[in-house]
Length: 234
Image (cartoon, rainbow, N blue to C red; front, side):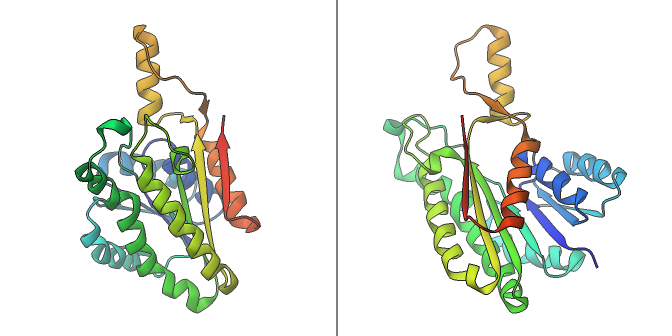
């Protein structure tokens, strides 16, 4: 019987690359994001590679809808063997423009929805003594950046994942976080960088990285289970 993974945040860039990486290793894949058309295209690509895939549309910023989303996922594949969480709000806010209202906007995708997903899927993982919860976020989770003040929500997520790992790793469930200090090719940030470069506009340029490389890092972390975190910072 094949294992299953849900990709919460199966957008262009890393989410799609993670889906491909796990599909190549025989996982049944549930793709979750807001827009159906890109998910259907990705599902067709994975099916052409021989993978079994399912498409679920959901707004991951709606934390209250997570229980219904979890039931929909279970109706397709049963209890998950693993899930990947890559959703995040746009944290590119100058620190002097940060307000309590803006911080509240970051928290559903940054913390609340992930927490609710863990509450839904972790019990079955603990019951069988095996499972994996994976997250990939920007390097602003590691260090404060005055251009990316919204990273405080990701820092809170990182703290939660560290605590979760310490609690459940001895019980057979792996929790891993990958923190990326580069522009992921095909992501919205990378596309905007390339557009600005072509137009001769000034922009904040950072090195780029292929999403397949990052997906391999996550896969290796999951299988080695010897570290709770990894960083890709250029």
